[in-house]
Image (cartoon, rainbow, N blue to C red; front, side, top):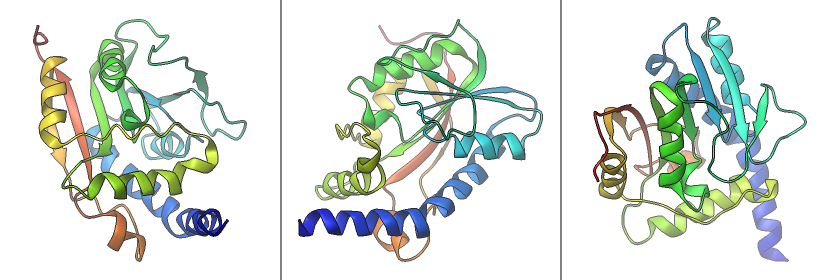
Length: 211
């Protein structure tokens, strides 16, 4: 009971003190990586807050969402997904963005491959970095605080930087941008959650994947 009440309290603090700061900071990071006149698919869009703000900041962009859970309050149009398959033709979008999505799926490389297939210009990923023996527990705790109440799957597929690099190479993706000092939380959450546990990357296709 005490643990449950603690998580509810932390989730409330995250919602009031952390969520809006995080969303706006992420949009600040995304805008320079995306062209002004482009189509964007936000995979795992949740309530569509990030996609909606991107549409406001990039008024000529066309933003669509996709998620396994479609919320009635979503701020952008959402296509319902089943598994890691993305029901869109090849090269349908200029960019696919995956914000804290890949560590929630059982087959992250499969979803990355699908995102590559439908993206003409590239992928933008924000996800977690496994660094040190305590980071897995901290990242798992952060995920529970932010997502458990929404019924989001929490398999905890966290990767180190070298594991991300290997996955990108195997899929024929190259890094064009990589940043870890994101500062996406306000105090006091920043003291616990920021550090170097997050990255944002822009990826583009190479000529071929590693066989």
